[in-house]
Length: 121
Image 1 (cartoon, rainbow, N blue to C red):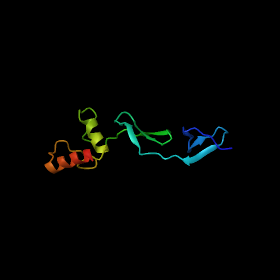
Image 2 (image 1 turned 90 degrees about the horizontal axis):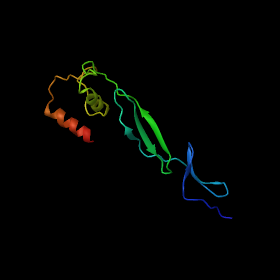
Image 3 (image 1 turned 60 degrees about the vertical axis):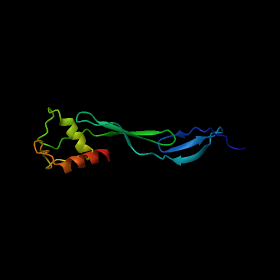
Image 4 (image 1 turned 180 degrees about the vertical axis):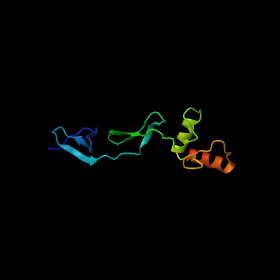
């Protein structure tokens, strides 16, 4: 007697499969997850979240840590606090020193265009 399974994938923690009407598991395979996609950006006060999906429909979610502030000259009460942390977290810009962003220092055109390029790529 031939197996008869629906087209819908079933899944558990580690694998995906088709279930036959007789109860046997067919086409057993490991999950094949895609890339992690950020579904909620982290901020300095809240964790973020990213998700990835398998072709069978199973999804995995993991937390992204809150953004930390390595700079002594970027205070949380300034309007640019979250944008600075976001840009540093994304690798778009860095501080002038490990512990200072140097907000009052002028940017040269090379720095500005490099930041724009990093933001897009």
